[in-house]
Length: 446
Image (cartoon, rainbow, N blue to C red):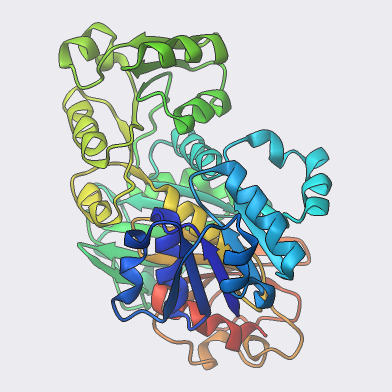
């Protein structure tokens, strides 16, 4: 697939690196040559210095032959204009990064499609929704709804008192009621796609697929504490903080601590009545004490500085806060944050990349999620008639060790999968795979 990426910032660079590994034909353009230095480090990426709103530069980037044009510069207007021009030049599909949620409203979708913008992503809004899901279930590290909520995937840090510890998975799932599936175990820095002979240890980060009706059972067997979140403290009045405050339930008491006076005034005039804005420095422990940090059940550090966010969450843990969430945009810091007991990590680059992935697989992919702390991906796939995945029972397919099937939907009914399960045409299948396996999905599902 020929893909042109405009904007070699964090999102564009990360996306180009991932796609280059999957042998797509990648061109990345940016107005600043130094932003393109990464493309000279052995990657199969063609760097071009140019302006994405210049017709001449777009033609130089061969946009007219592009299957997908992606504009992810920091400027929303630039991204929309670039997509409009790319469509007129001949790009088959376009995608723009935006920061105005109104553009995503259904009534505006047709307007932008007519203008030449096939799709749009708003990473801050997507990040806010992940935060809300995590706050609603504070015992989880990560929580995702798949297939419209028919299946869920939960990332859980296993506690010492958990009943699932030190037992082989084949013994845990021996009873007839197979209501969950352990799709992966992260132990230290190693991600394991487990077999029946593997076992769960205290301290493991375990990814489990199940259904909504069994959430409470999963919490109990993994040792999660049933803590109700009533008070939330947020450090940093970013766009993610604003969106999260608007999406969280109205019955929560939320405090946002923001250093900028003008922004504090804007937030106080914009956000709901249950959100109190404090103009101050969230790193000030005396201020945190004064604002009742010891009475908070959740602390979110959403400033633009990854190190500050990690340290602030560690400080919140010392005050006894149960749930901490850090925005960590430096990808290399994510394993460190996890090891330091940050409960949940938010990374806009990975969120944006996961939503762009859906345009890139030839299989019928309705959604792909990149797991920030796992170096892994979750895909919702539809098994096409006569595809390889439908030929045999799962145990006889000889699936590679870096992917597993976590569950499926058949005739609107969610179910777990096991060795004797045979996938049928039009089944909707949840696949958990390491980065190394993403390019293998097509051969099984197409």
